[in-house]
Length: 331
Image (cartoon, rainbow, N blue to C red):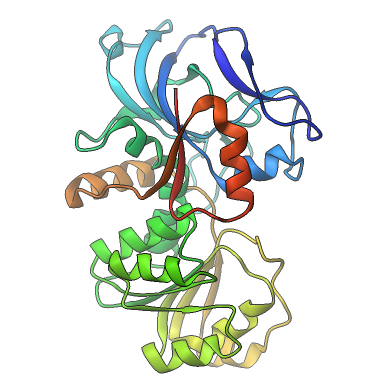
């Protein structure tokens, strides 16, 4: 089968023939129709991610058709259109993943291939209103955004939410989840075009984080926020506590702009703010996310669709942060 293989951090992604996966008991083989990239794939491709092994097939997001099943798996699954949950072996504690936790696409071979194997419990019916390309955009970023906003952020209708970095895959999902749930949403971005796109999707307003007074602008617009979702951190994170309402939740799941800077602790304890780390989500949260998508007939935002062979081009585009929404590869 054809697959995108990471041979080393010094070489571009390679489109090549590899062995088709063989199934163990409890596993299924999915013929991938579409796969999507995440920031994780970019960091792995440049050798800046923990536990990288070479060679490896990247990709956590995928949708396709079950083509084979292993021993002990219901034969009626063959031919079913499915979406794959990339959050594996979470464990019994919903608050934190187990030591066995893995994300599809490293260390196990991922979805940037004609076929991928996974355990049967990690496949779900593809939402009927979505194409394979749209469904493939959902899993990792959608799940991360869902847990961050609803489980950790405890967002509810009427809350004011700030999304730091509106153009990323996770950022656009947080925006879609928040608007569908009746929240008032504000965004930041380094691009006026991305802010306008966010407004068209239901954001009340947005500001450029490149502006010297961006925090003052947001304070004037919104008054204060009940939930902040941030995947960047960096030096500007120091301004976030000052934008929060008493009792607000600040949730972060990335650090693309750097670490948490020195913070003024006073507003944090005086306003009883919560700083909450988050990543991925449980099997129950994945199911809840799919139910939410079906209930509100949400369609993921796709920036561009490319053939699988152009995976390196898509990764380069992600590295430049040029996209708004997800980058999808068709197989």
